[in-house]
Length: 319
Image 1 (cartoon, rainbow, N blue to C red):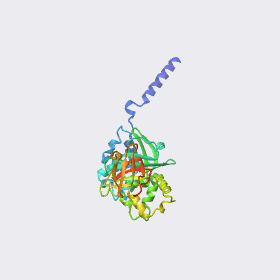
Image 2 (cartoon, helix red, strand yellow):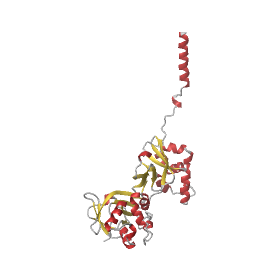
Image 3 (tube, one colour):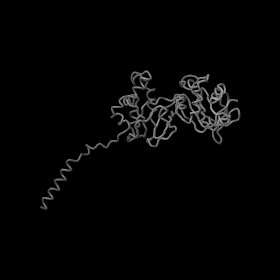
Image 4 (tube, rainbow, N blue to C red):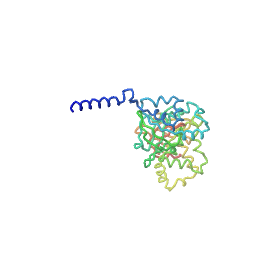
């Protein structure tokens, strides 16, 4: 009986060894972001676009990224809306920058998204610096640049993470951010007031290669507009007459210039569309208008494709 048990044990070990996968049969290779895209039938257009632009190799490496991934249906809608019959109709460098606008060089988990700005791997035509994207997170609903919403999150890869989106993220203009950022709701309301004789929205949407772009915009926060109404002793923005509002808005825009925060210095005169204002940086960056009212710059270098935005805490008023 003892010998029979030994024989049975040896036979079982031989069987287990024979049925175990060999080293050649075990695939321990990492699954990268690009592997995920390539393996899915829903991302064939994105896959082809990544290959065409050489970005497949970037997303197949070891550097960590977050990819906002548009499906075939989303990519097809984008192409149709922009007059392209296929990816091959899009100039390669344009296509590459659009795709890079869907890539952030860090891993962003869905639960950790916070409202604010991030830089993408795309670059602005205005100065070659990284483009910003605006992320809005409300009750775990994440929207990018006010239009593209994440519909499925946290598809993990060895070199980062993928979030599925329902709309291609276009290269942002200045108006994109003013419209998307709820903290700029007062400015958007002012820029789009129906009685304005100047079409500020069209002007600030000017392509970066055309005059009077690029622009530098000192954008008052919504709280800045609330404070302005209190300062003027009025209840609503519509109480400000059109000439005054139009003149006020011009003092927040510099044309033909993409001035970053590093370009500012003490006693620097800035020639806005409305007239001169003065920048200072000692003790914190500020803008002083002709009425000696000082606006603090509370956030800098929000980079759009046709200019840059700096947030300020006080509305600049005409002389």
